[in-house]
Length: 295
Ligand code: 5RP
Image 1 (spheres, helix red, strand yellow):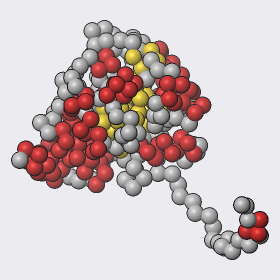
Image 2 (image 1 turned 120 degrees about the vertical axis):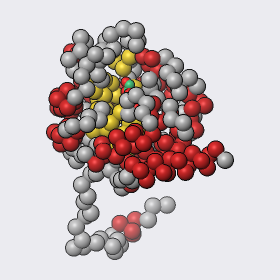
Image 3 (image 1 turned 45 degrees about the horizontal axis):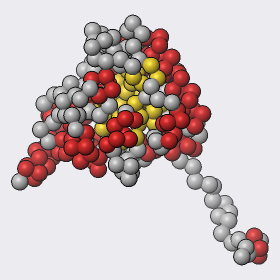
Image 4 (image 1 turned 180 degrees about the vertical axis):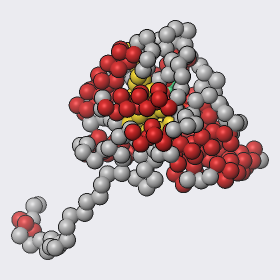
């Protein structure tokens, strides 16, 4: 039964103590609504401010890419070590156990294959379905300078507007066409366009010279793709340099799931991203975990 007396008998009003206020830890996200911030806080660790996203959406235009032939065998064992999963709705529904507590960033574009022009994409998921899947964010690519640049930007705008209606953030991927330069000028342009249009965070590639300018000029967080498989020490060095130069983490695929020891590699990457572990130390960690697993 409701106790009416309690209404007037409160004691601990904390008089004189201002209500606690902490700025939200995700760059550029202070003015967002609670649901949007809550989803971003599931993606970006509140302690480090960073994220290790595991990307395995490659099949949406590449089919069964090396390492992704059997996602149940190659990716599901990595889930405990990832902060966030990035995949298509087809793989999410068919392979990823619904009980996993990890946030999902849903690939919401498609419509082309690796055999054709990569920029020729459409929005390939309705926002209703993204909500049904309880995702933390949605994502599409923009292909700046490519034949279907305009359509790809329209896809991003559509996704941002539909996500905004329901408090779901959008990650913009800066896609690069097969023959396009991956230089600082290109990513300065592409990441800033994505942020200006309202993307809540942006995925870019790391560039050797001037990456810090890209993260500085982008008013929302940047995470880096891993790109083609590199030797583990090189991939860890790239991740280290990226976070040292302002990236808020990685959205990495091939350099994890194509590694000799994916379970060891994802933990080494996490040490770099969340603990600023130096590349040589992170590589030692990789070798140690790999050796343990091979015993
Ligand atoms: C493809 C993507 C991939 O998720 C992205 O390329 C990340 O994977 P990798 O680290 O293998 O490059 O967005 O369009």
